[in-house]
Length: 306
Length: 306
Image 1: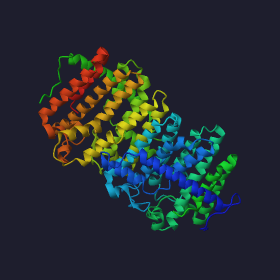
Image 2: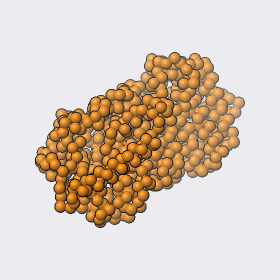
Image 3: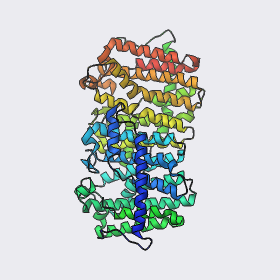
Image 4: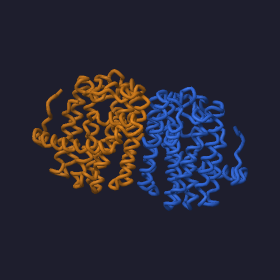
């Protein structure tokens, strides 16, 4: 399997990645600064819950979802600053899902991004409540910002709910130890991971005031990129070390999870991820050079090592 | 301690209760019918999560919060039908909090309203996710209904968050086995229980288009009634049987919880509940006869036996 950076006919990847790296770094700093302001202070009462929320949020995440929201907003000609609160809300929703997924009753993970998971530090009760609080706070932030229409708030809730992220996690749990099934694994991944990533992209586009055609193109990019992201995650769980991942490697196979490598093998999984990214990039063709960062980001997602 | 229906100088309690009982029954039927339509069907995929959500929601709750929202909307001259989606959202938020509070890592309760708790039937993982899904679905329902302003959605999130319901649960957990403390128990109860009950009342008033003065009066009623509700809950945990309560009696004392009886004793706690209800009723004086149901409901809350 190819382990080096991808090269395609569409771009000079070194240059594209360099431009992307700078843009990502800038966005990430702005996102972290805004999350810092948006989250309740660590010493505000009751302190335990605020510390647990911050532990989870500031554990060194890639900020993929908020970056996608901001970059899509810019690609569609919008002001990224207007999308920042929604971008942070999406990161809080993603983080709450990790806190709950890591619980002993779910995936029972002791490490996340190289740090002890929320329940290892604060206990299970506070970890459950910290997840609840991040989800609740996300909707408070969304509702307080005039740039977020009721329609976009409803879409985010749908993407995070039983037809999206939560539904995917349920299917993931209930499908463990079933025979590997191509339709099933795609359906799980579309809900568990792609739904919220697609929603991050849609949110940026909607806040930018994108027309229906641009919104559809961006949505398609988000869906393909989100699916590719999870395919690569599956592969990394098999191929990378716990140290590289910052979380326990090899857990999927151990727990009999439905994964792309389990269904198709590693070679074919890598090919599928590349195909998805190719389709994602193709979706953005109408945006021309304005899509350069998102195209590079899609490639980065397949090339990542953690 | 008085165990019969309260009588006060303000009303003929039999008549008031009879009128209230009919109004509550009517509202409850409408709320249940709307929840039935609002919740995903039990056979929709992934079915496990939808069944768990329905198990929790249709376990025979009193529907106090949605009834308060609808009755307040009517008292303020509004159309209760417009407040119905928000009323159902408040019930879903309340229900999610019960599902998570009952988990082994929290209060570890096997029964709720006489039925096995969600995690006893569906397992802990699905119970955690069902709680998450109810909270998420509540905000989806809120955002989809034009009658709910962004301001009311934000208020509901605040009341459910770390300055409200979740914060109260955290304080409740972290204060167990501390010496009984009057300020502490009031602060816990204001957050854990009164915040969402007050918010139900505010939501009904806001959707009715109440002016600032009426909203303040209604808020005050909600806060006092909410606090009285939890004081009575504390007393019932001591005095009633598990059969009467439909949940394990005597758990608060066993787990060293901060309660009104622990701080003040049963007699004084009952007196405090009556005082709070008196204050709640007084808050509604400006609404005259339009407040008759809410006044009777406040009395009902102190007189209840389960």
